[in-house]
Amino acid sequence: MFSKDSRGRLHMRKSQRKSRCLFVCTGNACRSQLAEGWCRFFWEDRIEAYSAGVSPHGFVDPRIIKVMAEAGVDISAQRSKHLQEYDGMQFDYIITLCSNAQRACPAFPEKTKVLHMGFDAPPQLAAASKNEKKLSFTTETYVMKSRTL
Image 1 (cartoon, rainbow, N blue to C red):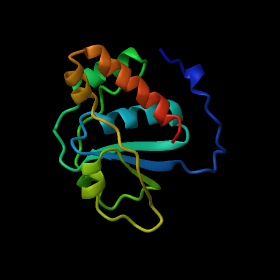
Image 2 (cartoon, rainbow, N blue to C red):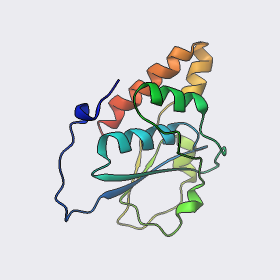
Image 3 (cartoon, helix red, strand yellow):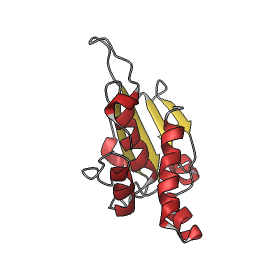
Image 4 (cartoon, rainbow, N blue to C red):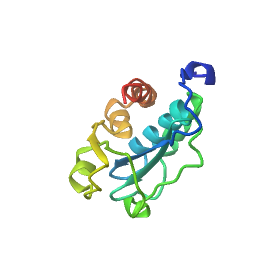
């Protein structure tokens, strides 16, 4: 679906440091995994992307892995992680992706920009519609939203 040529990357000077961005949701099984995957796909030369959950499920939803692979993004090596795994690590941006993560997210150093960009959970949307194609559509919306970051 997407090629490396379609990424439209801007080149950085070698002296510039990549920004570190942590995407946080409740379970780190879906939303934050999508955001991490898209961010790495589009901006791996400018951003170090990470994801975590405030109450991780312990797995990445296999449907999300499949849909991302269909879009040309491999997230099969990503794993579900707790926010505590990043204790002591400096981030430029923390982006919460659901209201639960926004409420439960701890305080970060003053220089860290904490943003909230809430998304509906793709598996719940797919279940509500009784249509797996809805999951694919939802993933594509993440592409559009990720380009606005």
